[in-house]
Image 1 (cartoon, rainbow, N blue to C red):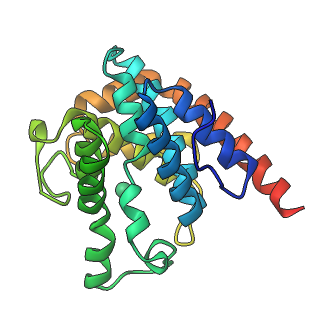
Image 2: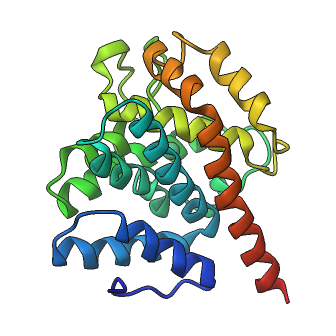
Length: 231
Ligand SMILES: [Fe+2]
């Protein structure tokens, strides 16, 4: 069944949303709402939709590697919506290619709490809300929005936060070039125990080959779709 309300511009966007939703166990209302909100993310910002689906797929690989099978579907769903609060952030901050002013940084960081509030009203799934709210916390307590440290950070947010950083490092942005898988792994490992939970980093290192091939598979499809859209 195709989710209600999918009207993204690209075939890939439509396929991504459909296949992401098919991986979840959802009631009919949640199913419709999930499709609707993913399509809304795609309409607002195709890069955020690509990122959300990539983070969701790679979080699934890491969760399975950690043996979290029972919790995996909920974390996969949480990963899909972790950046939904960006719909409420002005596009000029998201596409910015230089340093931001302090009030712009605050506006951008608000995507965590905005997303968390919206998701707590949309779904009765605590993990989904917690991941949106806390995926930018850091293990040493220097992250945002709450400055949580160590085990205070919800476990699912530690997992999705790591994969989020991996995809951000690999992606080409206005302000930074795309980096290779090995470069991304080196950056993440160097932040073991500061930005990232050591146990999650260790699990990531054990599954890194699978992460790399899932990333390559998704990005081949994204590139083929953007090439098709340009013709
Ligand atoms: Fe985020």
